[in-house]
Amino acid sequence: MQAPVQLLSASLQNLGRLVLIRLLVLAAQAGSVGFAWLSGKLELPWTELGITLGVSALLSVFTALRLRVSWPVTELEYAVQLGCDLVIHSVLLYYTGGSSNPFVSYYLVPLTIAAATLPWLHTLTLAGLALVSYTLLLLWSHPLEVPAGPRESLVIYGMWLSFALAAVMITFFVAKMAEGLRRQEQLRAERREEGMRDQQLLAVATQAAGAAHELGTPLSTMSVLLKELRQEHRDQPALQEDLALLQEQVKLCKETLQQLVRAAEAERRQSVSEQTAREWLEAVLQRWHLMRPEATYRYQCLGVGTPPRLMPPTDLSQALLNLLNNAADACPDNLDIRLDWDAREICLSIRDHGVGVPLAIAEQLGKPFFTTKSRGKGFGLGLFLSQASVTRVGGTVKLYNHEEGGTLTELRLPRNYGVA
Image (cartoon, helix red, strand yellow):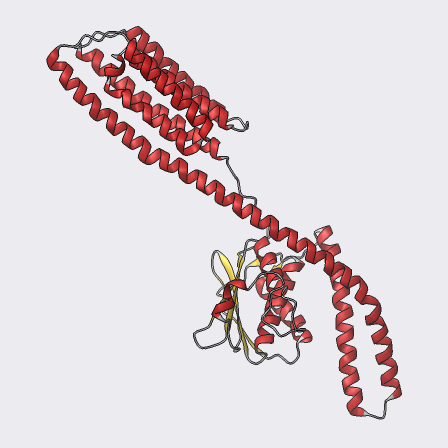
């Protein structure tokens, strides 16, 4: 089976990015405080600032350790983390001039992150927290005594650094977070589509199982009647040939039903044998030629070196039979079948010389119960089931209109599928 895709929740990925943002901001804040302390131009409460920066560092370490635990990250927890950043930033502003500090614009970074990643209620709550904090800083803050000349230069430097920091955070990290959310929604949509396809396959499989059970009795009756007719009309050679052909076809139908039962049992016991891609294709072609003796084809193996080995499940062989039958239905003469491989995948192409795929219905191909064949000659399930079986093992099926006429069907499989 195909290896499961590891999915991380959007909140978990965003919390990891938030830790990185917090560390970068902490480095900028610590650098600014360290520069002010070394310059000796400012008198600040260094102890309180050091404690606040230490709390921010401990919160970053705690969050990084929490990410290593398999607990799911809820939106509420993510909102609380952003709220902690707002509170820490407010405390730092309180000890460094309050609302007059140019770094006050950093309030917009957590709010932008919240708006891009959280529901509106959480975002509204955080916006209220930021607004209340900013309002309180207008009324209360630790006084900052700076001479006139250095004050202007420090304000300009702080405004530039604040703008640069906010621009980098919003442009890069918020874009990454939004991209992660879009990717998460895309994966959910793909899972929903796979679920709908599995339901359709289950419905088709249920109907097929019932039909296979019901066909056993009439096929046995037909076999007995054909045997009696051949005995009664031994003196008519032409009729004998037709009856013999009918008897072979009935026998093939019975063997196909028996093979379905054996295949289901083998799948249940997981007794699929390993073989080369060339052996698998040639075995399927041999079986298909018994089903469609009127079809003619040219087979070429273009791969260089040792053929890749694989363990094809029964439904994959049936998918290939469906594709071969579709090509023969379009034009049974001179099918061109080619097998090739490289370091990553196996490619099997089937080209017929029919009328090709009409562009008006190209997008409908592969949908259940949609067929281009005349009434009574197709159920519209062959290509749908083939695509489902191939997709299940990590491969693809694509149909193209060949430039020289007809249809080119490409079946691609991952190399060494199912081999340990």
